[in-house]
Image (cartoon, rainbow, N blue to C red; front, side):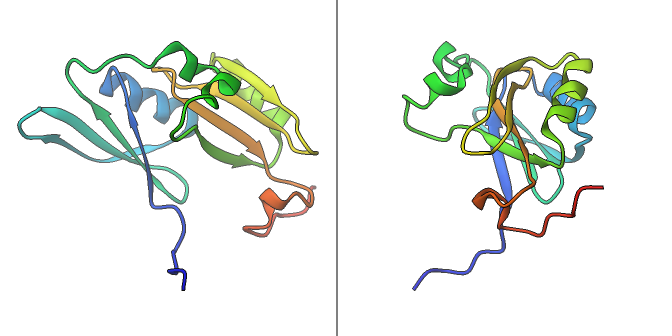
Length: 150
C-alpha cells in the first residue's frame, strides 16, 4: 500500500555563492530566509528559504565542482540521470516570462508541449527552474483547483 504524503516539503540545490543565491531567490520570487547554519566538518553553509508551499534548501560547499554545461540546457540535461528542475506554477506563462526578462533573468528556453506552456530559466548558479502556466485542463493542473481566468 502506498504511503500518504502531504505534498512537497523542500527542494535542495547546491550553489557557488550562498549570499548571492539568497538575494537572487528573494529578488526574483520573494522567498524569505528562515534559517542559516553550517554543517560541521566540511563547513558547508546551509540556508533554508520559505517559498510558496515549500522550502528551498541551499548548500554552499567549499571546493564544489561547478554545474556541468550540459546540466544548464533543459533538453541536454534530460540525457543525464537525476533530478532535472523545480517547477513553479503561474497563472499566465507569457506574462511571467516578460516579468522575468524585465528582472534580467536568463531564459533558457520556452517549452510549448501538448497544450502546456513552460519557461525554463536559470538561477544565478545555473540551476534550472521551470515556470509552468497552470490553466486549462492539462493533467499537470489536476493537483489543485485553478481559479478561472478573469
